[in-house]
Image (cartoon, rainbow, N blue to C red; front, side):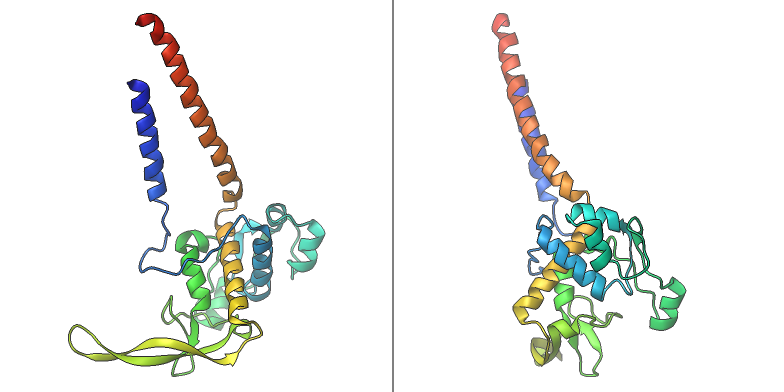
Length: 248
């Protein structure tokens, strides 16, 4: 009976652990990003997009180039030629030259470090944010995932410029207000809609990886841990049967 109770307790614990695996951002339902940190090619593309479009303003102070090379299966030469656009060394962190004071002076607010944005926001939110930029009526950039975001759409050349089409909606108090019905692509980008979605997915996967590089190894090790526990439980049960045979 004790063995059965132990097995039941272990199974319940596994179900509870799985039930808490929800996006960190919470809130309204978001379209699944489909980002896969185990897809090495996707991570490599995401690193390329980040270095070329994001690293000028947003640092990754917790990520080193040599760790990036190891996890993304890149050689030192490939990293230094394609992903290091400054005088940084192979063992340096992915930092930027711009100081916080300069960022505040130039942009009004220093661009944040993005090392942990994947863990804090979650993949679905990042995917929605990267795809949610539009130009509002005043010609300023806005975003459906983060209203009045201070960041401009640095990927607009890839996605193009989309503008909202509004419709009237009445709230519970009976007041009419405008809401976005859909978007129109007024200035095409160099990528198709499907290609840009893939770019956003690759960037999302890369930021999820940067937020927890150990996840690449942790998930693989976790499978073996579960198999060991299953095997150990079976052996423990056989041992219990052998001990209690003489008792009965």
